[in-house]
Amino acid sequence: MSDQPTLEEFRAEATEFLEGRAERRPPVTEFVWGEGSDQISVFDERDRDAEAADAELARSWRRDRYDHGFGWITGPEKFGGRELPAAYEREYLAVEQEFRTPNMGVFTISLGMVAPTILAHAIPEVQDLYLNDLYRGDQVACQLFSEPGSGSDLASLQTRAERDGDEWVLTGQKVWTSGAHLSEIGEILCRTNPDAPKHRGLTAFIIDMRAPGVDIRPLRQMTGSASFNEVFLDEVRIPDTHRLGEVDGGWGVALTTLMNERASIGAGTGGFAGLFSAPRLRATLEHFDCGDDAVLRDRAARLVSDFTVASWNSQRALDAIKAGGLPGPEMSTGKLALSNNLVAYSEWLADVLGPRIQADTGEWGTFAFSKLLLGVPGIRVAGGTDEIMKNIIAERVLGLPKDPGIDSQTPFKDLAVNPLRS
Ligand SMILES: Cc1cc2nc3c(=O)[nH]c(=O)nc-3n(C[C@H](O)[C@H](O)[C@H](O)COP(=O)(O)OP(=O)(O)OC[C@H]3O[C@@H](n4cnc5c(N)ncnc54)[C@H](O)[C@@H]3O)c2cc1C
Image (cartoon, rainbow, N blue to C red; front, side):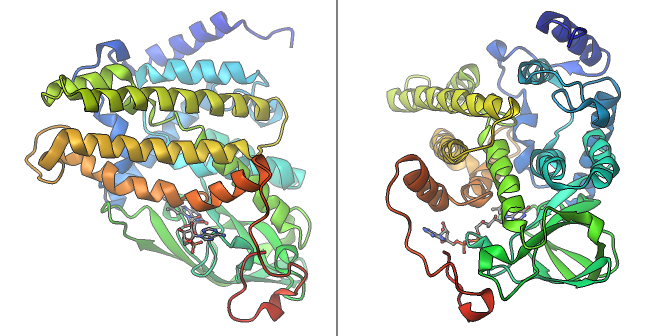
């Protein structure tokens, strides 16, 4: 584009936008113990009112960003994007990191997974209806895939969608739906053809989360938060225009979402880069009188290098996607690396803090990290478990023999009680 700013001009534009609106963080090289508590806010115990208030702040920050040309930097102009290369988005995020801005966790699924799927598979009218609103933060989307009996083996899901003229009628149950209570819409995967093999009888839709027949109930986690939900669907009606892709072609649509999910989780620097910064790790050791402990220092150095390598790998893969490629199995290595790094960090921190991580004495940066310790196992499961990531890497990267499964040609209805994966 002829009017494309240089990266330096763009950085100056982004800095000007941020300077008028947000307080600067202390530079990461000057990390002071007690600063930067916002780095762990994703694991804080928050009730749903506080969470809703945070989401409102995030929505209004997104609105401001969007209205000033920072809402969808790489996206198509017709949806408010600027069609700039991925390097510009990275630049914006790097500048934003220098400021204290609202936690954008509420948009992880909405913009990381559902919006790219709408862009790839919805009809133009539905893209017009939602994409601007999603990127402006006026609407938030959740992902309704998992069911009580279907997680890793997603294709065995049983929620039914039956056609009725120009509409579909949905009945069933979804579970582990993050942020359903904060969402206006959702991407849902349903069984539309029980006579077809299980992967070939699924269809994806955009569902209105406030429609009659949608019942959202909270699930409390061991961190104390309730960011999950069960979602019950009782004859919920969806217009056929809100179908994503072909009838019975939902598996391909789901793969678009899942690959984007691994890409957005596996990118892995977002909320966590601060945790792994060398000055922060050093300040933690020194604050708790462990600065001379050779083993803890060695583990800290390993954390920094492992995280840095993982973030470079993820960035390379994300750039390839933004340049028009499809997310591939390298997303699984990124996701696995993130869970391994977070587990290693939380174990290191528990060893540094000792009993302080268990006793709530009111001292900053001690007991609060118990939320991190309890939240990290969830990352091993979300977006595909560690074992499933290892299966994908074994089969698609290393070329090892496929995990044995049952006959994938058998119709879903004949798979009886326990339809194992194929
Ligand atoms: C933080 C978090 C957020 C989530 N958000 C959402 C959401 O918004 N929307 C949504 O739809 N879902 C969501 N989920 C659900 C998530 O996708 C599933 O939990 C995940 O896919 C695993 O499914 P499952 O829980 O049914 O476990 P299962 O699939 O029953 O797995 C149980 C165990 O068996 C292992 N296993 C299963 N199959 C194999 C195999 N073939 N080879 C080796 N080991 C195997 C697994 O690794 C695991 O250890 C979320 C989960 C978490 C933890």
